[in-house]
Amino acid sequence: MTNKIEQARLSIEPPVVFETTNLNTEQQSGFRAGYQMAASDPLPLDLSQSTVFAIGDLLACETEQGRDYWLGRIVGRLRYAEELIKAVGGE
Image (tube, rainbow, N blue to C red; front, side):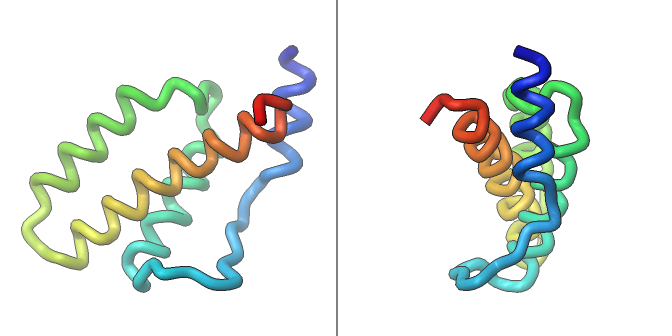
């Protein structure tokens, strides 16, 4: 199974390119950071702890730009996990 996961990871490796999006600039920046972080994480499907921390950062943020960034970062991590599950064969 590990080989299949590694092959799947290579097939969805960043960078993320947006053809069309409804994310603003800060959200896109956060999305890329979250996706990249998940791609470098040895256990990308263990999202609970990192997501809780990111939600805490989102709630503590005092600026709209900062909140947009953290929201994008959460979505980026979750999107990576979704793509990895699909690539491994869990569609």
